[in-house]
Image (cartoon, rainbow, N blue to C red; front, side, top):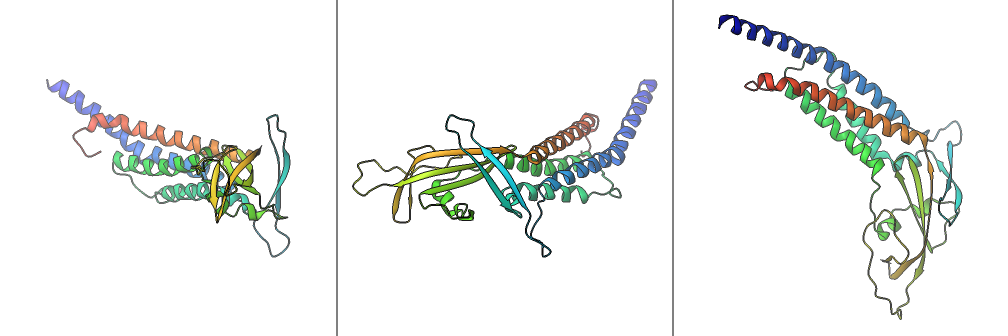
Length: 260
């Protein structure tokens, strides 16, 4: 009996030593790795801005369609025009870095629960950042009209065109809606369309004093390599967080009666 109790105590001491090593050494190693990865991800969202020493740097993107209705074009973005489209993703990435930086090498984690809480907070920011790239916002046609995207083009687009620009995974997508006004004498049943990533011909909406209908839709897109890099960094970071949570959770069964 005494031998069994001694063996149990020895086993518990070994497990506790391993757990303390996990808290004091491996956790910080993972946090450093996460910070390095997320800093690289943040760099992908940084575009040159206006400079007093010269003109604003431009980036050209060749967009094309893959359907039978072949449409091609070149979209020129100045300064941080594209970074504004993914600003939420960039801010969330910085938020995750901030959370990690608050637990530097001098910080001593005392419980597994503390680590799990930090990982959950970081993973929340990373999941939101990744979703910002993988799940385009659903907008109504009036919301697109009010967004100002149509007004950013030079020369100015005709009044019967509506444009939406968004990110989907590693692609920059541009959708052009050709509109026509519904006459007061129209026999069509006016039904305003709801929110969507891509509206179809026949979609209707009211703008000002006019009732409008989408007659044609053209979508073009192009791959942006650094967006793919950012997605990979977010995915790898989420995997590292989950792996660390799993390692911490392994020890929970040994201290079920203790705060964890």
